[in-house]
Image 1 (tube, rainbow, N blue to C red):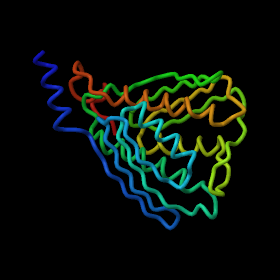
Image 2 (cartoon, one colour):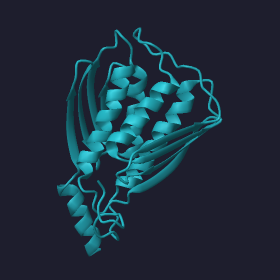
Image 3 (cartoon, helix red, strand yellow):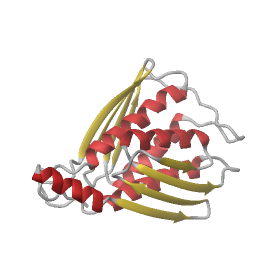
Image 4 (spheres, helix red, strand yellow):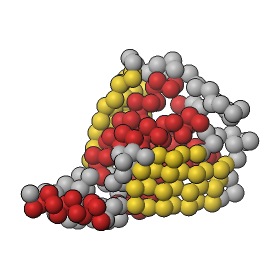
Length: 216
């Protein structure tokens, strides 16, 4: 009981948070992340499909997430999509600090209709990304005249997230649907659950979860 009270108190007082601002000639992004959240999301990237996916990610990861992004969508959605992934990875890295006590590794699977997405993540300080598809899904059209969201945009988003967080991120989509929405929704759900696991504090872990004693 005493240990539970101690960790409850730490979570109440010391929620891990980060605010990241990224301003370039292509995008202007502000992102506010709380790891010990309630799954609340306020997302406005100008890309409706990405907004919805990030809402699912935050909900299933129990993260509080606010994103305000303005980009050169008149050109295409590439820069905004990729830069949001960059900023999200930076926010998690900043919020985790030296990563002392975290579980570091998480994995989850989520289904949607006939699709199953499996995600494994290791916040090890070294970035690596792999997405395994048994076939290509067709584009899912965005509203408001933006170009269609494609599987390659999702890959760019996840790769940017992994690079900035310093994580191994492996994603497998079994039986991808012809509807890109049905293929990617379970990925974002599973990613939220896996990152929730990986970022949790393990009361058994003393110090940084690496035999090297450091995670860069």
